[in-house]
Length: 167
Image (cartoon, rainbow, N blue to C red; front, side, top):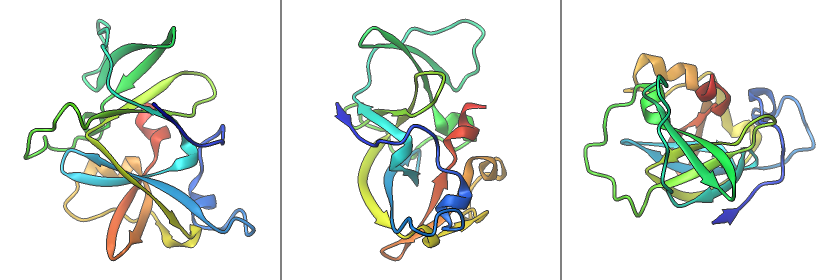
């Protein structure tokens, strides 16, 4: 288990683009792998990262709701963002040993997303995130879950809006 982040509320697109807080110099981004795509998630939205644990399915829940995990005696809702966003299934099988549950900071519930891999943490300038830009080749449904796009070391990544994943 790795505990990270200190914020309690999600970052909005205005603060990512540098429009809200001129004193904020850098934003740390967690690079995640979902299906065949890499995404960025602002690190301050992440509470902790855990290895997958057993899940209890719930009846009549949407396909993307994987179930409930018991995390230190608290129920943890786990969703599959790839299913939620309509991403195609990964072309290569994902090793379970690489998968992680990324717990998100939410004021009212304990929730995590299951990702295929957690790659690394990048530090970028808030102005490096281009709002309302979605990468090519993504399903049209994808735009509902993206805050913007950032380029890191010559590669463009979509920035996830985890709030949209939960609605």
